[in-house]
Length: 281
Length: 142
Image 1 (tube, rainbow over the protein chains, first blue to last red):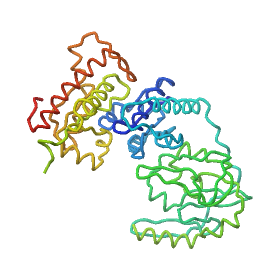
Image 2: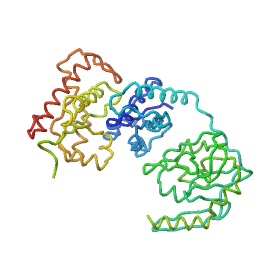
Image 3: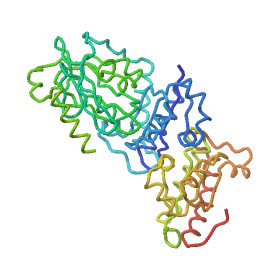
Image 4: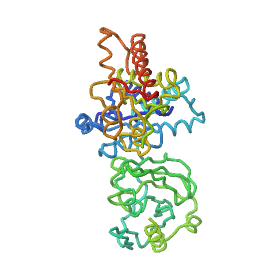
């Protein structure tokens, strides 16, 4: 499949200037077309053919995520995402506060492009799931207004951050709850953690993203990431369709689930949390 | 009630223009106006915020006189400012400015040549004059 690059406009922040430069350099490196975000918004038909036949590399400068929102709103297929502000943080060196690119910005832009192109050329094979899980069969139902939220009756443990874990043979499969997927609405992107990453209970475990929000996944267990769901990376909509089954996100080899469990909720207790949260909205 | 008029900054808004040299010219001309030629009198605004309906951006264009700087005849900046309810006091198109520079080689989407900078400075100087007039509460010829 062809690739196209959608960058934010990036006019009024140094990170935006870097985003634009990343888009231009990436387009040159992989010989892809750049999609102008403003023209796309004003005349989407202009890019209809490109969008239908390409996967997008989306480049945002800041957390306003204009390019991402645009891609999500059009239902475009997003293959990779770049958030320049995250790269700035990771570099530990704030950009000079000028809108014209300075040497530090150019260096950062090139390093982002190098990593991006490298990953595109040699995508890391998503590890296969390591455990055999069966989908839940019995649910509790929490209703609020016109909404109905499902919660598996047994085998699933939840944290109050709306993330579940189901453990089998020392491996926890992790995903987000039905309540959270409905709250986010159409999920367009899953940013997974790296395999072999050690994670603490309540530590970061990547994020999922919809047009409404970015949801940081808070790990319900401690351990080491041993797998990510390739089907969800390919089709993030699975999280909406089947949050407790095929829409699972990662698998973690747990360190001490008995200890983690002391701070987790069973289905019934989590149902109370959902009732409270829904009532507060 | 708007902030247009004497002593109020003018918004200079370039198109996104990403991936094209005309877009780069509109962007660089904007920076020349806001940073060098009319600091304090001119400010800019990211067009993507406006097209995504950011309330602050919409309020900005409604409350300040705007000069739009478009790379091409699609006039994305001009049209989006108008659609947001802003008043375009002056609409400039980079492509039109090339009429006085036939055969010029302005560069590419990443970098301007000397030709490109010449045109950019010319556009910026013209826009800065308009900024000064609007800042002084005068009208400009569209």
